Image (cartoon, helix red, strand yellow):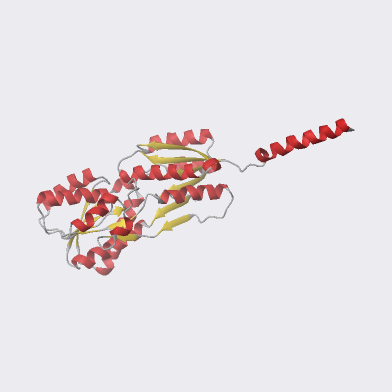
Length: 311
């Protein structure tokens, strides 16, 4: 009898010690697809995504892949599927990702797009309000230079829906509030180098410009440099977008030009990671989460300075 009781007690101890691992919370596999670093904002997206995944600790295992084009991102998507990713947070900056993402969806993988619109049913998305950035930019410029000014629009067609929506919001609003604006549209990229190069040429072509509708802080830094190097004093407004600390710091130093940024923080990608985990846990999540636009200029920039920001 004593021997029987010892066996029962031993089994109870084994079960007791085993229980925590048996009932441990499930660990989910989450992959992140991001563009290779082209400028600070993109670098900050990858940084913020990894920071959030690290904070989640044992709740997730993760892999982050960066690519330079749609073909490379497609190959990395396949790698994540082979690895066993249950959810993928994707930041696809190029056209041509619809088919591979649909393949991942058909395989039962949760897809959360960050920032970019991919027109597939079943994809979740976290984004800033790109269209409203254009709306706010139009109101800001008209408020500063009036309804009969000459305004340069710097679009970035290679950025897909980001540029398209920001341009749409701007043009639709101008049509309502200032249809007499003289609009000049040029293509550029979301880098200060391209902003400097392209806007230097634009200044030569156009002897009078009142305002610049730029969609990105880094582009705007190049624009500002081109203006200073050309000695131009006609331009009174430069918009931007993103939330770059260096750009914020220039706002009070240039009292002859209203420097504006539509805050579009790379920290939003943390929300995308959280959405992926919530869906995997079976929680109810809205398919589209849009984060409102905040306008920053010399009147309020101090509220947005962050010495720890990687951007």
